[in-house]
Image 1: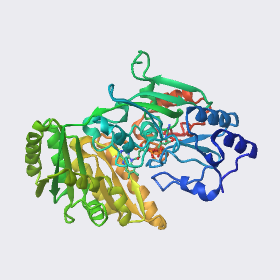
Image 2 (image 1 turned 60 degrees about the horizontal axis):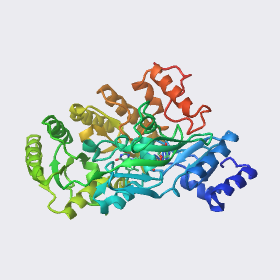
Image 3 (image 1 turned 120 degrees about the horizontal axis):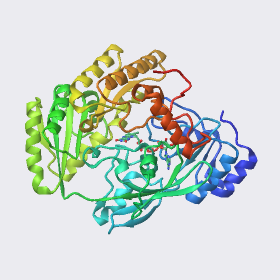
Length: 469
Ligand SMILES: Cc1cc2nc3c(=O)[nH]c(=O)nc-3n(C[C@H](O)[C@H](O)[C@H](O)COP(=O)(O)OP(=O)(O)OC[C@H]3O[C@@H](n4cnc5c(N)ncnc54)[C@H](O)[C@@H]3O)c2cc1C
C-alpha cells in the first residue's frame, strides 16, 4: 500500500490544482506504478496534475516545505525507470500541461508546455510547411518534457540530431518552487549553457514547464529503400559501408528476423518477408533532384553486402506502411512474450557486425529470444530480451544476459545508453563508463539545482559511498 498524504497537505494541493487534480486512490495510482520498463514497479504516494508554471511552482513549494521527494512524469513511455516514484514520493504529471503556446512560423520556433505530445507538435506546425525533427518511435505518445529530460533521439536523428539541437529556451521550476527561465529566442547572451545542461538531466534538476524549440522546413522530398538480408551481420556491414562512403541518410534502421515476424503477424505489418534475418530501412530526404543518386549508391552497397532483395517505396502510402512496421515494432513484440526488456547501448558503427553476432550468441547461451530493432546508422542498438516475468529462472537469465550484452558493447568502445537515459535501470553500469571523479562532478552539478536531493531521487548517479573501480 502507498504511504499516505497528510489530509492538510491533500487539501492544500487540491486548492492549487483543483479537486480532480490529485490522485490518491490505489486503483488509479496503479496506472503510474511503472514507465515503459515494466520490470520496475512501485506506487507513488500521490499523483498531482498542475496546469501551468505557476501551479507547478506552488505544488513544489508546498512539497519541499514537507521534505517530500518529487518525481516528474510525462507520458510514462521512458525505458529506464526514470519516472518511477516510491510510496514516500509525489509524482508531478504534466498531462494537463499540453498546450502549444505560440507558433512563430517566420522565425521557425514554437513555445510549448511540457505535456505536448511529440507528434502533435509536428502536426500543428505542418500547415506552415514546418516540422519538429526529433522523432522517437514512441512519438505518438511521448511528451516534449520527457524528450527534453532524456535528450531523446529517433530514426531521423542520424541526419538531424537529437533533442538538444532543437531546444533553445526553457522555463524550469526547481524543488523549492523557484521559477527560472534560461535561454530563448534572441537571448544567446553568453555565459554557461544552462539550457544544454538541463536537456538530458532526467528530471533530476527540476521540472521543465515551458520549452522553446526550433523547427525545420519540411524536406522537399524523401525516398525510402528496403533491403532484405539473410544474415543480420550482413545488414550491419551494409550500414558501415554506406556511412563510410560519405552518404548521409535521414534514417538507417535495422529490424531483425524475430522482430519482422512479430510485426508481420500484427496489424502493423509492413510487408517485410518473414524468412529474412534482417531488413534495413534506409531513407534519404532533401532536394528531390539529389535523392535518386543517393539511392543508387546505397543500392550498390547493399548488394555488395549480400542483400537478397532491394525495393523502394513507390508512393507516400507505401512509405508510411514501411515506417509503421518499424515504428510499431516494440508494440508488436507483445505477441511473442508477455514481458520485454528493451536494452539501449551505443557502439562504433564499424563494430556492428561483430557486436550483433556476440549478442546473438549471448541470447542462445541463456536460451532467450533477443529481438533487435534499432537506429543502426547511429550505432544505437536496442537488443530486446523477451521473457515471462512469472518465471523466476527466466528473469534471472534475462538479468545475466543483459549485463553481458552491456559489457560487450562497452568493450567494443561503446557506451551504456544511446537515448533512453540512465534512470534506475543503468545505475549499476555507470561505473563501467564513468570515473569516480566524473560522477562526483555530476553530483555537484545536481546539488546546484537540487541541494536537498529530493528531485527524482535515486536516478542517474549511483551510490558513491559504495566501492567501485
Ligand atoms: C515503443 C517505444 C519506442 C521508443 N522509441 C524511442 C526512440 O526512438 N528514441 C528515444 O529516444 N526514446 C524512445 N523511447 C523512450 C521514451 O519514449 C523516451 O525516453 C521519451 O522521451 C519519454 O517521454 P515521456 O513523456 O514518456 O517521459 P516519461 O517516461 O514520463 O519520463 C521520462 C523521464 O523524463 C522526466 N520528465 C518527464 N517530464 C519532465 C519534465 N517536464 N521536466 C523534467 N523532467 C521530466 C521523468 O522524471 C523521467 O525521468 C521509446 C519508448 C517506447 C515505449
